[in-house]
Structures are given as structure tokens and as C-alpha cells.
Image (cartoon, rainbow, N blue to C red; front, side, top):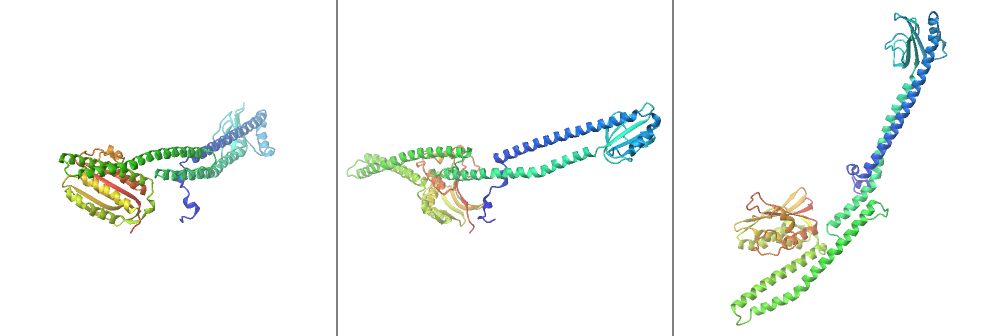
Length: 464
């Protein structure tokens, strides 16, 4: 379906039928239909009961008139009533004490019930729905008086037709009303979800759209906007303080380092003093590296590098990083290997991706034991690009996976392993900027040394 058609972006029915508006519309509609059905049932019951009562009264009046006729004149009276035509809906019959038909147009068709009005659909004598009253006279004869009940039967049939027709008309109307009432709110919710995804992607300046109707969605959007505004303000203050501290302290610390460096190379300096000065320089280098990493993370999280995005061959970047860290891996007696490097092109910032991959490879080499292996691969999985760095180190416990991507958190890393606890934070910031997913999981089932599989999973990748 062409994307420019307006109905191409409409929500699916499976999503519409789950909305509260659709359910409420269907519930209220169903309640209305049920009320109408109850009213129709009451009308039918009252009308049919009234007609039955009137038929019963007419039959009993006719029966009283015939019972008063002398037994000798009864056959003639029955035949006269059947032929009179004064009551075209009436039928009469006379049965002898021995059960033989004597007069009239009604025979002794079963069932034959005495003293009570009963209904009969058809018979061999008179066809059609009848209400019949039969009574035995003092002489043993049975007088039968019947009346055509087609009106009652037709009323029942008409009510059933009305119910079926109402269902065929009302049910589609209910569904249509539910769809119509749900479409607008669902599309508004879809817009709210898109803005929420934008906010979750780091754009705290985005705001929920407000339609100005003052309904619950507008109230929710206004509340979320206020909340996001407060979060943006608080984060801006925290980042401002952090960046200011890192930026302001970097200059004096650099001057102190330079002075210590010159002092360490002064002539006639005792060896012990020189060692202490070099140790202080190393500590200052660690602090300066941490400040630089903090400022780098702030720059990445602020999204100032989005203008550097371009189509980039990720497999070529991975090959560059492997070549760059091969000497370090050799020095640590770790085998740095390139696995399957599928040709994949992603729209990204090449420098930031190299920085993220470098941090992953550097961590993998540092935490792999001598003789271990670090494998780097680029694969396609279900239309996604997956960049994986797998080592044979001690891995990261499942309960610490979320913590290690936070700043300065090194998890269960050994204090003997150098680092600032900011490497994975930089990787997470780069992945977040590109809207990629960073996954950290055990590389194997070995409990003693499970290793770590760090994967950067990109979105949809076009085939090459």
C-alpha cells in the first residue's frame, strides 16, 4: 500500500479493539441493545398474553352458549355455528360419548384436553394455528370451540424478525461507532508514544502535543511535559556542575603535572623522591583521563556530534580497531582475532564508533587471561547488524550488568586491572546517541570463566 495514502498509517483493528474507548462504546451499545431487546420482549409478552386472554374469554363465551343448548339440538347448533360465518375465525366440533365425530368442522384430533384452552398448530380437520377449548356436557358429549391464532403467531414471528434484523443492523453500527470513537484517541496516543520515544532517546527538549481539549490525554500530556521539564532542568544542573568541575580542574591539574614532570627531571634529585614524583604524575594522569572521559561522555550525550553521521562500512572500522590493538594484545599474550566480518553499512559517526569499539576491545584484552582469545565479529541477524566482542575473562555477573555502564562503576573488576570505570559508559553513550542497543551477556556456560560477549546491535540494515 503506498505510504502517501492517508489510510496507510491508520491503526490496525487489533490495536483499536484494545482501546478503552472502543470497549466502552461496545459495552454501552450492547447495554442499549439489551435494553431494547428487553423492551421488545416485554411488549411481546404483554401483547401475546392480552391476546391469549381475549381469545380465552371469547372461547368460554361461545362454550357457555353451546352448553346451554339442549342435547338434542346440539348437533344442529354446532353445524349452524360452523356455517354461520358470523365468526370467520371460529371453529366448532361435537364428539359423541363414544369418541365419534358428530358435527362441526373440528374433529377429535389429538391432543384433546378438557376444561383448559390449549394451542394446536395443525390438524387433519382444520389447518393452521388454533386455540381450542373442549368441555364435556352432562350427556357425555364433548363440545370443541376453536379460534384461529394466526395473529398471535404472526406477532411472535414479527418480533423474532425484528430482533434478528436489529442484530444485523445494530452490531455493525456498534463496531463502526467503536472504531470511529477509538480512531481519534488512538492516533493521539500514537503521537504521544512517538514523542515519548524521542524523549527516551535523549531529546529532553521534546514535549508531548496538547490538543487543547482539556480531556484526560491533554491532562496526561501536560503532566508529562512538566515532569520532563523538571528532569531536563535537574539533569542540566547536574551536568553543568560536573562539566564545570571537570573543565575547571583540568587546567590547574595539568599545570601541577607539568611542574612535577619538570621537578622529576631536575639534576641531583634523589631517586626515592623521583619515584614518588613519578607516582604522583601517574595519579594525576589517571585523574585527567577521567576528567577527559567525563567531558567526552557529556559531549556525546548532548548529541553535538550528530552532524558527523554518514554511511560507514562497519566491518572496515572493526578491521582498523583490530590492527590498532594487535600490539597491545600481543604484549598481554592475548590472541586478538577477527571472526566473520560481514560487509555492513550503517549511518553513524565513524570516529565515535571507532572510540566505542576501541573501548570494548581494550576492556576485552585487559580482562582476558594470558593465553586467552578475544574474538571480534560483524554479522547480520534478522535485518540487524551485530558487532560482537567476545573475551575469555571472568565476565560480569548478571546482577551487575546494568551497573557497569554507569560512570565510575567497575563492577567486580579487580583493583589490579587499570581503568577508570568510564569505558563502558562511553560505549553506552555512543550506542544511545546512534539509537543502537548495547548488550552484555556471558559468552559461554563455564561458571569459572564465562567470559563476556559485548554486542552493539544496530537497527534495520539494508542488504548489500
